[in-house]
Image (cartoon, rainbow over all chains, first blue to last red; front, side, top):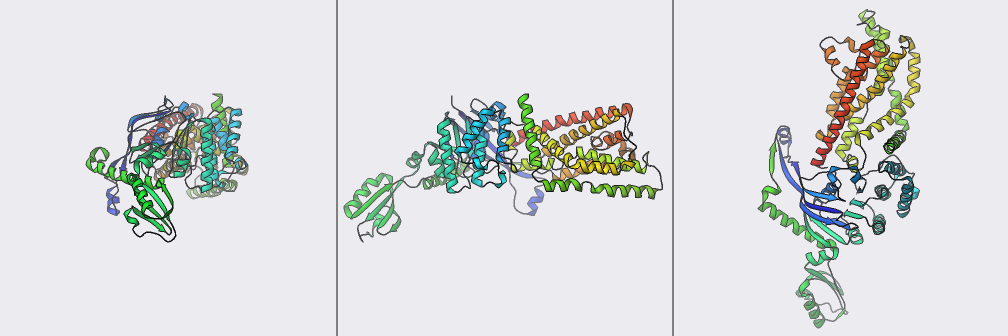
Length: 346
Length: 271
């Protein structure tokens, strides 16, 4: 059985459409227009026990909404989901003791007290055996290197230190499923790396199921074998990270280093010139014609070094998001009613 | 059950610790509450002199001051500063999610946090309260009978419960309106007049006197003070205590229903 099963999950919100100006504000007191917005549009997804899955997508794509649905904070408009056999939005205590949600922008610890007090409270509310609690806490604080900060009020911790404490608190009850919403947001490169290292180690050791949303490609590349791309409430891709480039990028980047002062002037005939820093040139070449272009360049010019690479992942994903935005706009225009409808209420 | 009690005990301890963090502000806030006593003593003395009377509806000038001092004690139990606005802020800023995700009950948690708040307050205020009452001892008719004293203490505890569940219910309205400041202002105004905090409710003419009898507010200040001073006696006193208990039970139900309805709304709305 899958740890997470999602079938036809849809969540739509009614959003108040306020017009500009004072008059509109006054009339808005008596009569308001609402727009129905689909945050998640009937997604299907299965995640197996022990998988580490990344949720990628632009802002407003529906990533956080999906995590909120799966953690029972909100209930869907239609559709079904089961996490570890539980319906999340029924909010049974037995389910709440099996999962954790960490939100990079929300603090769950007691602001004015040292983190160890929050940990003690977690021990009680999650009914963790005292010996087990001591062992898990010690293991986590050592792995995250925050033992010396346990007695310091949370408000006096840096953002990175606080996130480590948040992770410790979330993992004290050894959840089977962990939802991470932007856990490295706002952190510096070192702190990001430390959190990534910890998550990777922890997940490999415990084999827990993790769903991660992040805007940092490095998080995703370091941690997840499987990537689910969600845009405008729909799943656009589900597969490996490398597969994204194969599927969504029709280009490769060709870097050529020419022998002394023999930079050709007609490079544009081989592909789109991205950059020239003599004696090097970087070209964007269609994936299908890379072999042909390469043999032509080598035949016609004196080349000292050559490399063929996939374009940067961020670039591919940005292209893909732009593409899906266009598609979504078209489908919305073509089929305006179910996706968005304007209702009025007084 | 044992695990639940252990959880409650831990929450209580942590909340007490949290209250003790801002010592300076807390001590100052507590002591400032005693300032109105002096002005009230002057005010009521002046009222009685100006009216050239020895009593108003069975209250002598010393009775009124004793009444005022006792309502101050009752308000120390029933007032809930920051409770409703705190709930509204948590709803607005999304912190309320914590109670939906973690296996912890919002209302029980808030109640324990408030008990901790009050315990720390009493700890700081006990000395000043005792001193004020000692200095003002001549205004009191003397200690009541043990039966009356027991009812007085019970009514104080019930006034705490009533104040908590009433104001928590007000705060939970934030699930629908997000902002409850104006609503709270109206609530505070009602409480101030109809709890008897401003003057003894016996002073009210009809039909107000009857209307106030059908509201919960009088059990938050007037009733405990009236019991202590013997203004409510015998079966009427026990009946009052029973009605106060009834109001507490009603608002426990209202508060829990509102929490579940609020969760459902939040859950449907998002945030």
